[in-house]
Length: 281
Image 1 (cartoon, rainbow, N blue to C red):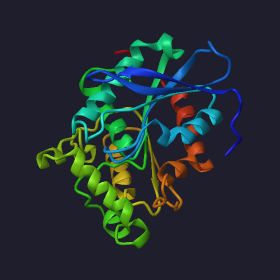
Image 2 (image 1 turned 120 degrees about the vertical axis):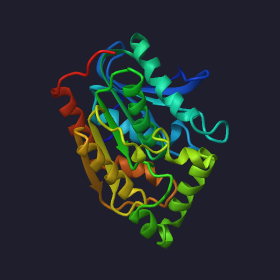
Image 3 (image 1 turned 90 degrees about the horizontal axis):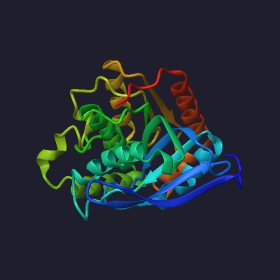
Image 4 (image 1 turned 90 degrees about the vertical axis):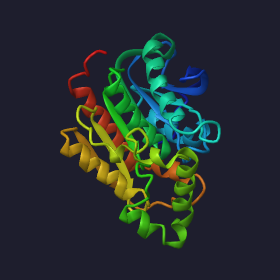
């Protein structure tokens, strides 16, 4: 990773969720007042039950430092101990709408809106893309899903195999505990807004970059979702990152800071810039 530049800036602000204001942080590069064409709205991890803006702070600083033409808005959302599903996904969609309506405040031209996240936040990113399609906006240029949690049934081969490894037990247990908190009603576990992997309606979604990791219990569900998107005609890139110490505290975010992951993201965004813009909502 490159050293962080002194031109990298961040500021805290509030964004509007479905039931009120939520803490957020805007990352930018360069002189104040410079407008950017691309905005990434990013949701943190934490298994739906914990986490906050600090969890992905270093990753997002490196992301903007290496991609100075993008703004990143890191947004919090209602955690399951406060209110379970669908509170978090409703917040995610509301925040996308808020960003669209507050372009001037963000220093964004409104040209390109990308939604992203890691782990539980990647679930929210994927689901908010579904919601934006189903609810007529806001138009999204792309979705960036890093080690997404997409299968509440915890049924994939990587979840079963990797969760048996001593150094992965904590990760698998955290996923199970997160889903218990987020989806206390068992019937919700097959809802497409809780488990996009279960959705039978994946057409007409924005292009996706999906980053899995070799020894991550979430690997197979990430790659299965990518295959389903491709089968539905969604332009999708799936990239498997090499093994990372995901069981260590904070490593799920730190692994996304590796040079190859930042390179994948930069290439994906560059491809979106060359593509036709999404239709206006």
